[in-house]
Length: 141
Image (cartoon, rainbow, N blue to C red; front, top):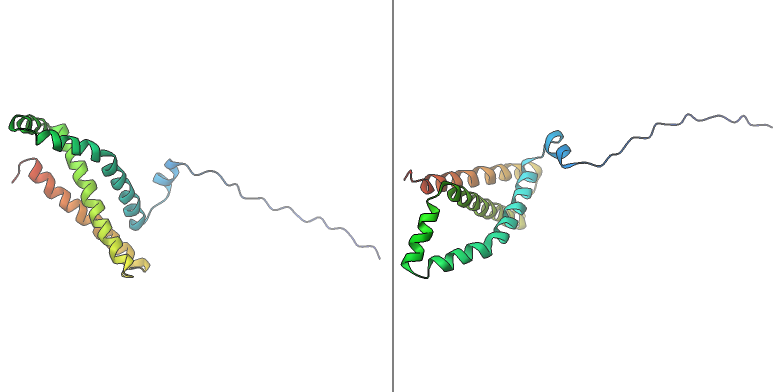
């Protein structure tokens, strides 16, 4: 009994490539919960890195009335106001995302739909509060 040897056709192997940052930002659509998670980390890192500088500025502004007036003059610069607005957004976003995480720690809004909805609310609320801070910072009210 001789068995005929069949040649099995070889399947083409899929090509796997490394995913670049540009692939993630341009080709993939991240859900709101992923954006909130990434922004929560970025805002926390930014606040952590800038905390010594902010504490130094607070210490120097509290030394005397003259130093307070000096730093008040610095804050009148538009560029400094934009930096302060960015820091305000970082704090407000980190705070609202932290409240969302506290709800999730208590087993609330863990399913996919509720998680996406709360993530959208975090983005909306943090941007709305930042807009209020911007209006106050730029002297609208």
